[in-house]
Each structure stands twice: as structure tokens, then as C-alpha cells.
Image (cartoon, rainbow, N blue to C red; front, side, top):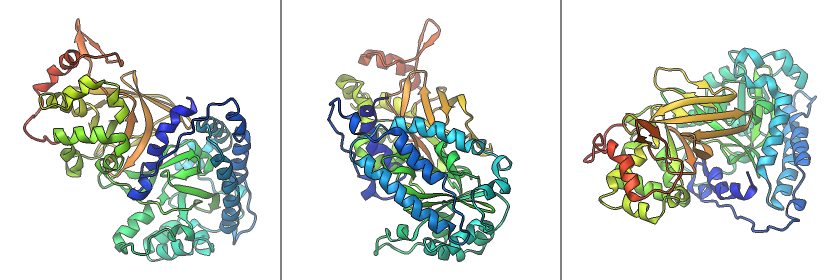
Length: 471
């Protein structure tokens, strides 16, 4: 994929999971420099990966100040990387590919997803001589005094992070992260604060190598609207280096304790809003989709988290709707075409099943599972009666490709939401039509209004046009 193909998505990917509207409104500026010297000015892929590896593989010999020294070292390194990346545009995919291969070599043991496979305490000792638990490391560090004070208010969290029930991963906000909280911000309740704290802890062991090959990470925060499955974090490698939820930069990695590992982050991680809120906060990408959901009444059903347990929305961008052409868009958004628009939009929504790029929550009462490496196929039933989407996920380390019905491509994965996940799609998904008893999938060919109506007519009889049915 060329860099220019990535740029229109930069603002969108940086916005996913960001908790406040001011940050979500950030946009990326595309460079139009097409000269041959463009790539000559870029930092070397190997140079940047070497910088990352230098931080990831640093061995800190001091016990008491291990966290402190790691943060100081990693902050200096990451600042050098960001400075180089911001001097000019950067081909992120090349970095991803290189980081992926390197992380497979250095962190392979952590990609299996089982506690027993990577929870050997002796292995921790190879990296760090400390005999402290992850809580003790946080409590002893001069960089995490505010986090330690908050955790200490919850005896069960202290006991958990001092215990050996699992090898935990803690994304620890530094004291500087707390300074970003506005002075006028209301004080959260103790219950809400505990949810925020548990959102920083994973019950699984994720050293840096495993993070680099993971798109999402489960946390201790149980998703109230995910059937009790873990609310997940999203990881990304981009202009800021390694980030969590696209906005919190990792400033220190692989501080090993006797019962897990700590990574320092420069922003507090806030549990995400629901799917509808994310769509509303990104009008530059989803204004057409939001208008369609509003006109058809589906936005009310989607916003009601009591009628579904998790879900997956394949969200067409504004550009995806533009591909249909002005005649079809004019028809769909007319009063007569509204029932056809509703059928199309229902074909983009999967209720009660949440498919991330590397994990799959199958619904209430069924335990979720990681998506294995290689090719994974699943048929997801949509809100359009008797119609499913054929999903193929190709996963090789961090490089992931998601295809829908063998044609449409997911351009941005894993918009983590409180009640599911959003994937941005490059084309509006249109149901197949019957041709000689054989289903013919839509492959992006030009459609007339008559062609579209022919495809959708079989589904209109099942559609409740007068009200909002439950998901």
C-alpha cells in the first residue's frame, strides 16, 4: 500500500477510542511533495526499528529504580524517533512490516495467548533482577506516585497486583499523564475510577514483542455491554511510535516484576464511548452514514445498548457512498428510497457478535477466543433477515487484512467501542442477487437504480418500515 493511500485514514485512525471531542477533531495534513527526493529525506526503516529495539531490549540492572531508569531511557529514545518522523511524511506500513518480523524473533513466546506458555518467572529474571511485584514497582517509582496512590485506595486491586494468580500487564500512566486532566474536570466517583484503573490492566502477559504483533489487548474491565467479555485496548504503531488506543504513547517498556510486566504510558486510558457516539464524533468520515442511520431510524436502535450484547459495524465512509454515484445516492436518500437505504444499512450491522481483527466474541454465553494466525473465516449474520457477511481475516503477526464477501476491504480496523467494534469499509456493502439459482455477489461494478432495487426488493417484505425493531 502506498503512503498516499494511508494518509486519508490518518485522522480517522488517530481518533478511534479517543475519549474527548477536542482530541478527536485532530486532522492530518497530507504532503503533496511527489519529488524523487521525497523518500531520500525519510529516516531509514532500520534506523527507526533499531531505536525501538534499543529501548525494548534495554536491561535495567537496578532493582529499586528499574521503572525510573526505563522511563528515562525510553523517553529519550522515543523523542528522537518522533522528531525524525515529524520532519517529513513516513511510510508507516514499511515500519509495520519490519517491526513485525523483528518482534516475531524477539517476542515469539508471547503470541500464543496462554498464561502457562509465557508466564515463567525465570524468564523474567533474564530481563530484570528485581524481586518486586508489579504493584511494588509502581509504588516505588518516582514517576508513578499518583497512580500508586489511586491503586492503594482499593485493597482488592493492591492484592491482585501483588498476587500470583496471573502474569499481569499494566499500562502505567506516569505522573505527567495526570497533569493532562483539566483543572475544571469533575471528580469521578470511586466506582468509575476503579473501572478506569482496571482498564489499564490485562490479565494476560504482554511483553513488548507480543504487543507488536497484537492489534487489541483484553483488560480486567468487564464489558457491561459485551456480555461480560473483557473491554479491549487497541495498539498502534505510527508517527508517535507505539501507542495504546491511538493517543497514549508508550514511554517505557518491559519493566518485569515477579508477577507480570509494566509499560509506562503518557496519557490515562479512558474506556471508550459506544458505537453511535464514535460515528457522531467523526463527521468528516461518517456524516453520510450518520444521516442514513438517522433517516431510517436505525440510529435509535443502535444507540439502545439494552437490546444487544456487543456487535460489529462495518461502517462505510463518506467516500464509500460517493462511489455509488449521485443518482443512487439521490434515490437512497429520497423518501421513496428510504426503505432501500434501510435494508442496505442493516446489511452492515452485526448484533451480538463482536469481531475484532485478532479476537472474536461470539455472543452471550459463549466464551470469546483469539483469532489464530493465518486465514480465519466466519459468516456473520446481519440485521438484514437471512443475510450474512462472509468475512475472511488474514493475520500474519501485526499485518492483518479483512475482506468482506471476497471483495470489500476493511481500511481501518478495530474502532474499539463500549458496545462492540467499528471497522471502516472501502465500499458500501450490497446484498447478492439471485441469477439462475446462484447468488451473485456485488463486486463494485456500476449499478443503476433499477439494478439496486432488484437486489434489495426481496428483503423489503421482511422490513418493519413503521418502527424500530429490536436488534
